[in-house]
Image (cartoon, one colour):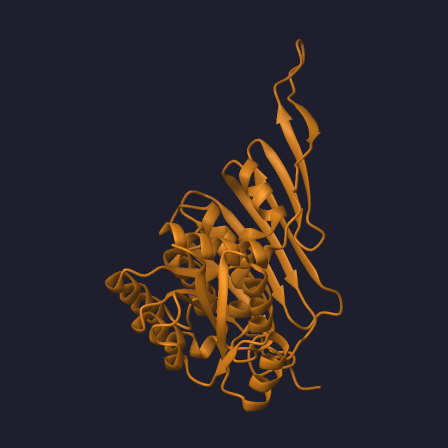
Length: 317
């Protein structure tokens, strides 16, 4: 197979970045994009000098794969159409709004023999990848993901907007059934929950404590992993990983040694790495690192958090 012919569906904030990465990837051929807004479509067409259409059907039989970068509420509709047209799909996170939608997309892809990759970009963050490469099974996971209000993704709450990044990482690290969830959240700027914290306990004893917010003054993207042999601190924004490792006791000592351990974090742009991986999977017909089932697992954890969510009633002033 030569260059993979790609069409990007949705030319908004994230779609623009996907257009950048696909246009720069020598293994991909950006054949065009889909955008329903006429003004935005003209703007992006002038920027990228590729074909622009308001409907994906215009690219029937002219593409191999599609990147679905539309709002979450339309993932199901856009990805279904792409799969019915015979395209492999990379769907921005979350895979869909509900598990029923996710199951239908995964089933359709399987029936058509097509790939589904989900855009949980943090899995391609070099710091996250480096830490997951050395982390033995964690017993306690702490994640804090806070951002300024951007006005984007307001069709979903902060669980599906931000916390789902860390739920995906938890799902990749923990292979035990969920036992209990406790969660609390509050709307701040929108009608949806904008700040939330959740405690997830698994049957093997692993606990994950996650906080997410989109009404913060200062952005924070940090994860800490506590394992039997290591403590790993990951700053996703600065791509720094700190590791403290337990070693056997010195002769004559009753206590293990503790020492810092260097963790090499290579250079790399997470979105470019993710999109390149998608292109490689299409060419090689291999399962993506974050396939449809991984995206479903993250959504399942998100739905469990939402089901357990309590929203405090504040007294009148």
